[in-house]
Image (cartoon, rainbow, N blue to C red; front, side, top):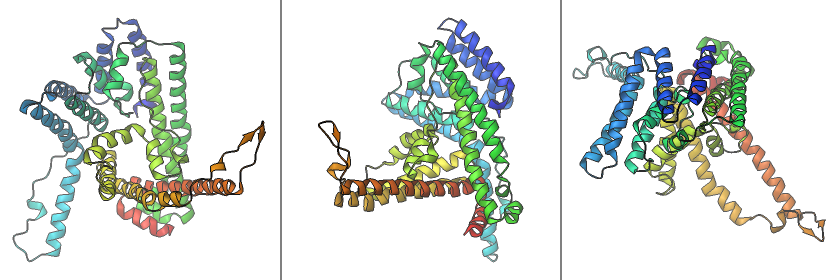
Amino acid sequence: MIFGEALYFVFLAVAVLVFHALPRAVKPWWLFACGLALYAYYSPAFAWLLLAETGVVFALSRGCCRRDALGRSAFGLGLVVTLGLLGAFKYGALLDRTLHAAVDRAAALLPHVDWLPRATALPSFPRLYLPLAISFFTFEFVHYVVDARKGSLPEHRLRDFLAFAMFFPTMIAGPIKRFQHFQPQLAETHLTADGLAVGVQRIVVGVAKKTLVADTAALWTTPLLSTSAMRAATRQELVVALLAFALKIYFDFSGYSDIAIGSARLFGVRVPENFSWPYLRTSIASFWRHWHMSLTSWITDYVYIPLGGNRLGLPRTLGNLVIAMAVSGLWHGAAWHFAAWGLYHGVLLAGHRAWRHFVAEPLLRLAPEPAAAQPATALGITAFPSAGAAVWGLGRLVAAVAGWALTFAAVTVGWGLFVMPLGRFVEMLGRLL
């Protein structure tokens, strides 16, 4: 991966030194040139696609804010271009395989029905190579088009958008940034001793996470990577493999995020944090508020809330959670097990919301926290909490520990869906139970 190569850090050092030596008006153009050069080096076949899409998105955004038919057309076309390219390159082959498999299955079940088409008679979707980082820059472009339509983007020039689109520290692996947060920083970028120290520290920590922890944990994940290895593993080895993968994916992804965040700080730019101790959270909802936070925020703002969020009653809220997480799952990869992983987490989030609504909140109303739950002081003497407050505190501690254990177990088992096809995952569950 790009962030693990020495060439990246040489490129970063040169880019930062030149950036801070340039006049302020030229700096956005330098960021654009650096991002395009880095992308063209690693993905020369698709640099033209990224450049063309960037130009189209900017041009359409100029008309999105109009409150007439032209504005609606520009907005719709912007979504069609961005999501259409993502769909064609990333999901076209998946839909093609699924359609052909469904037709084959129908023909096998109904061999005497002459009018049913055969898979061999269906046209095949052309096999396309996946452009580097298309998922990340597509989500940033969708955000830009939608917020241009809302009229919530600040005044800016072409150079500002080009710097945003081609800001290479976040182009390849996120975090997913927002234009409203990024653009004002371009006018005030300067490198301080504190920014340099923080940036270098984050990069070093990120490299250590990736090379020392994630790559080491990956050595224990072999039973998850093939059906034969899974079948040869014992139950204990499968549990260890799932735990190792949980560590690997966290330290791998958070390591890349640290490198990206640290690299951005060297330019004087702050980008969103992506992880905040997610495996220590005591509910699945809290886990997702602290895991890949920039993606969770994007899914919330551009999928969950437009679907209705929690404004249309509990049943609709639960459905919106499942749909939003299914989108999140497919964003991670073009395979049905990724969609299943997203649906799995959507069901967990819906179950947590239903638990709160039907069980936790009614219990809190029936047994509110005792007034003396906090230590009282009088004349400088600390009073011991009442027995009721002590029991309440103990209950909260037990609930927190139980919540953490259930959340961590559910997330860890779910990583099996993330890393393996559905059939193998079901077989693995049978081995574990």
